[in-house]
Length: 278
Image 1 (cartoon, helix red, strand yellow):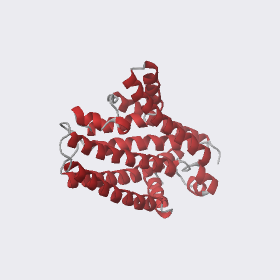
Image 2: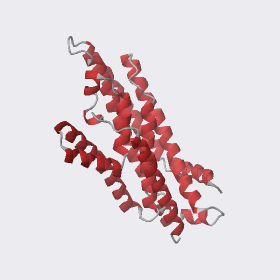
Image 3: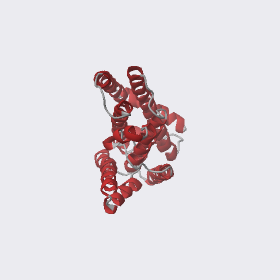
Image 4: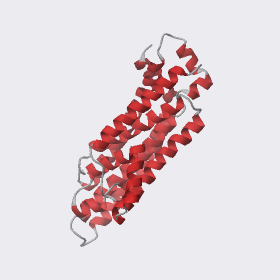
């Protein structure tokens, strides 16, 4: 048994528990409401005379960036929820005892689960984000920025959370592990807001706090990179920033930081799980 079989069993278990089905149904309902909101919002915008140059483009950017921000949050919560008990929870239930009794390395169990959860999130993000981009394009007649790059960066942020959850699950039970991982995720979100406020107020302390939170957990920074790809320039770019983006997005070096975080988290998960007594 190898990592790809563990990934297959991970996918099958998630489907059996109907977690993916529940998330899909809820997301479909959200997309329907989102489409209705975009249609009425764009209609009212077209019926409003005047306004500064770039207003229509900025509002369309804001609609898409705000919608994708919501999907990014849903995907992040789903990533934590799926993987927070992937190792310790199944050990408590006795599921992994049957797997570990076979000729399979523990590293393959960890990496297989990571691949399985990543594939689930890739399908979820790819389908839902594509539908959202299509909704905006059909209703407004505009394709916003580099729309294709946003889902890839959203997936990277979810992969970071999966890695953190697996690292915690190698030692902790699901409840404390979930609290820790979600607290780290919330810290990154709040730190991003503090960084933006510090940038506007020219406060070096607040700005550095935000940068430190991004280095600690780069999920918010990865989203800021995605929103920067979607935002237009000028007034449109300023309008589509705010709570859903960043006026000062991180550089490409943050991708290297994220990759390093993911490698460390998976390395710790493998090493810790190999040393754990069943």
